[in-house]
Image (cartoon, rainbow, N blue to C red):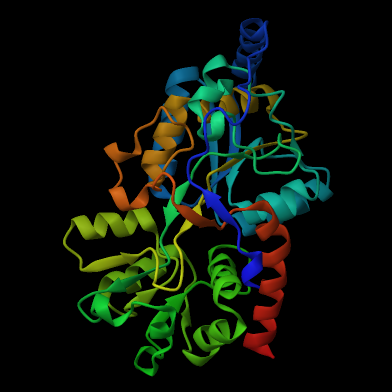
Length: 365
């Protein structure tokens, strides 16, 4: 299974791909879209259940364009299920989404719910490859046009509450299997699409089934309902080892003096990259198609993406935004270092799904 590990370079050479040029008549097209979008009056987006993002994106977009944002916050898998049911009934209620890769790949892309972005993103400041890692827009899908990656942040493996655990006590993966930590670990459900299954697949792929079984079965971790609950447990020391806490919330807690340590890698486990919920897609049959185009260009612009990245606490894939102005250095991937890309497409649609099915067997078999 170790051969299934996907290694990614943090920064690709800017000359590796040709830059994309804006259409010659982009301004005329943009003005037409904007006028029509103002007539539509609003754009409806699916986005994370994140107070900071909810408070940041809608007012900024509305101030710039005079178009209201209807913000539907929730877990990607849950809102996607609702959206699927609506579409099966002939109802089309959402224009665009900011979601995780699992939902994007296995639902929206696989079920052909989304439109190509290469015909929607037209502003010169958006399509200019010199503004992006790798010298071009970072599309996640094999068609290179449907799902745009907006974040590329160094991922935290887990957090420890240092009032109860000394950092020296967990230096390698086998330390996590120490019987003294039995019942003291919290995580998301590893059998459900999302953060929990992402973490489990990452560990399974790198360290094998015996380790995954030892951690998720032998150590009897408690399953949290959401990231806020896991973060609260971590802060109060209810469970001193937590997988999947809310990164930006934890950072605020650390600034407030809570004794929490993020663990990015272990001696036998390399660091990873994550895009979080930082993928953009626009739905076909959108109820406000012109407003959706305006929103997509804005969130991929320097202004929109910086607001989003700051609110979410992520490293943007645009190179003209300085993440060091609002994030600790350890969140930012180091040039030239190889990381495990947990948002790699093949890992997501093939490896991860197989591992999730196997985890169900291990936990419930």
